[in-house]
Length: 324
Ligand code: PBG
Ligand code: ZN
Image: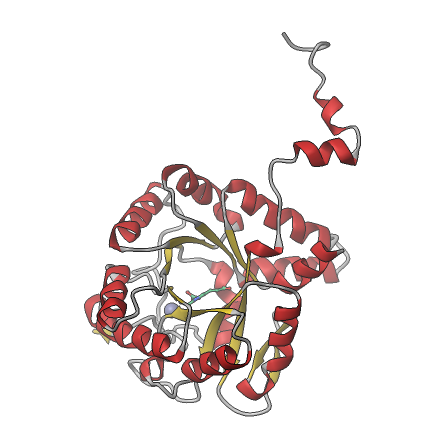
């Protein structure tokens, strides 16, 4: 029994009825804001391809943190840019490393803010790859050993959650064992489970100075052509002890978010990555799209696809828009 009995437009007549039948909402509660922290003093450096996103030194971080707290954004995800890079990325497990000092500063001055640390090596290695190299290839198991040292150091500094992004096999298991062995049984792991080898990371690599000096990341990050493989990666991560799984990038991978949501019962995070941010900002600046509306529509689509959490450089502007 179709038309004229059924007229779907009845439920679109005005904003009140639209509010009542709306299936998906976007809230500040869903957002994680990434922050770049650079070793040094008095640094507030805008990233050329990411308007309004800056690299801060710890002594300039407060202006950013105060805004995040005032906007009621629940969590930040920290990326460090060390002054010292070497072939293994040893700053990552140095208790006086850039991230460890940043975490201590934040937890001391903004204890209510939830602090998540990115766990990888590419910003810290002289070659820009996400682990230890052996014959031009990233050595999986040696990288796991260094990852264990890194997460224990992050936990000792006060991190609330760790987020491994290097796509090493077995990394969640290695981290869970390391944290539990050191007494940090209640620190959760948000795993970058389905992280694709994507050209959308370009602006981030400029921001974090983490472009590989040779080759690419295709031997560890996923092939953008693969959909079923994402379910395998997520299943392995959950089995190894992941508390939250992530899909990255987000917008070009909504099918992956949707598949994971319908196959698993853990929270799903979507990483709205740097290139997605830059494209919206560029088109908005050219006057070609209404940036604010496109941002809200895009993040809503990620929620509709099944994401519970969105990691986004737009977090502050979205929080302001939601406040009205
Ligand atoms: C590094 C890392 C990357 C991002 C987060 N962690 C880049 C990469 O894999 O080269 C991308 C984030 C973004 O583009 O916003 N492991
Ligand atoms: Zn990396």
